[in-house]
Length: 114
Length: 114
Image 1 (tube, each protein chain N blue to C red):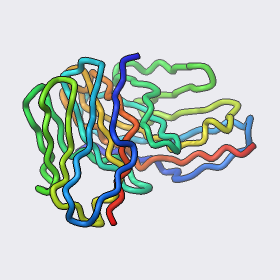
Image 2 (spheres, chains in turn yellow, green):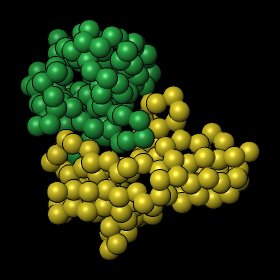
Image 3 (cartoon, rainbow over the protein chains, first blue to last red):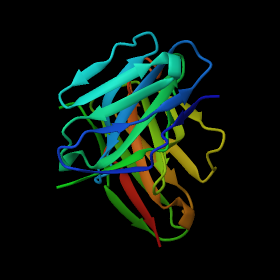
């Protein structure tokens, strides 16, 4: 069985601070994919990144960066210089290569105060 | 822009009165998914269609049905909504239905049951 744990339920920061969201996963599959989605108050789940289990390179996209460490089964997400528009719930998710069911973590609510 | 569209965005129904939620996509994806998301929880997969093949999750109540009349459209029917069915309903699509493909979500329909 697969499991994704996001230990932080809510994080509150002041604008321009950096914030790191933790994601730890469990799977017995050797090939799998990890995702991060953003859910703003409007409700839509917005795709941010997909990473496959064989690619441990960190990735940076603007103010967003992701750190994938297979040795610790973690796929952490950092927002640099946070902005009010970053306020949302962020979900980490896992899917096996031959599967079609996303396993979501519980989500982390990020509140960025001006 | 290619996208996933859900209508209506907000739906109010009465206890026991059937309701239908709609999803359409311009991505020409093979797979369409329906998720239920209750307040402060992660999305939960109800079922999905791979082309015309319907795949139900084992724990999805019989009260929930789905139809996919063509590639572009998929409907979620709730035959007799209960108070516990109040939730956000998210539609998603993916190309092949395998983990290699990203699932793209629509904006969701927020269902209220009175």
